[in-house]
View (cartoon, helix red, strand yellow):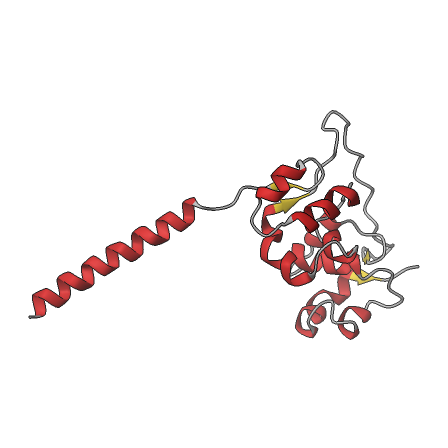
Length: 168
């Protein structure tokens, strides 16, 4: 009896493992918000006709989060697909603009109102999601607004506040 159960369990484990492996292969491809055709947008799971039309009309995008901030799609729909979205230059032959000089003050603090996404992400503890939220929340009068406006949790703010400033 025990052998039957262990054989059945082993068989179920193999089926589950095969299922997980199959899911890993079904990973959706990246979708370029600025260059994807309407048909490509429609083929992408989570984007229907209305969203596809709004995306095409709203081009160009600098950040994928603009889909929510500009009212193109609701946050719930965006959160389900955001990892597979990216905005790139419409014309790949155009050279990207040079990165701006660091926006640190005399004390080496990074200005929340002018720092680039990459500069914010470089701060230990600030990932891409928090950097996007910080940028979307601009302008700031005080660095403490990061907590009062629920941009970052208080625990993170305590770790990074000495590295930040807010200048108009």
